Length: 137
Image 1: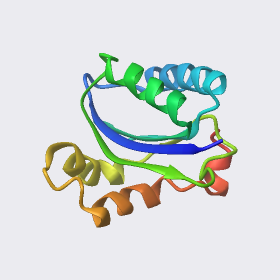
Image 2: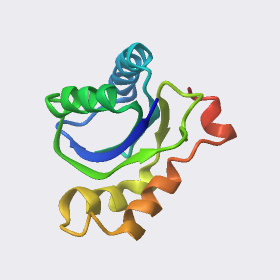
Image 3: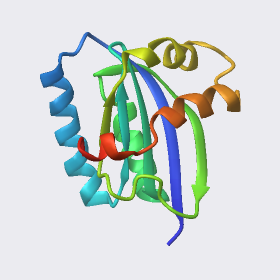
Image 4: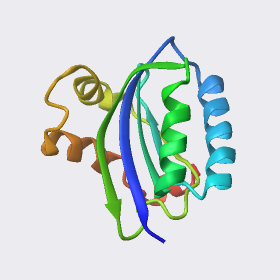
């Protein structure tokens, strides 16, 4: 089976508290298990960054559903590629709350240089699974 990975950023439509984010995570985890999708969601307070990976059709369907979700605006895909193996194989949807990424994710959402591999790589590296994130799956 060929795998596909998408990394997108978006702006929260309204301020979200931790309970609202937990609702988003619960829905994402349920949907992702059904579609054999893994990934990680980061929320910085005003912006979302998310990596989705799995079968191409399932990832594209998920991204389409997310694109129509009124809970966020200004969705921008900043990386899309085929992959040989999953980076988030153990997480139906890992979660990271990182206020320190606010400016970096905002730049990806609002700037025309979102295709800058350095900037994209910097943000994606913060979404890398580790022992701390393992407790958050």
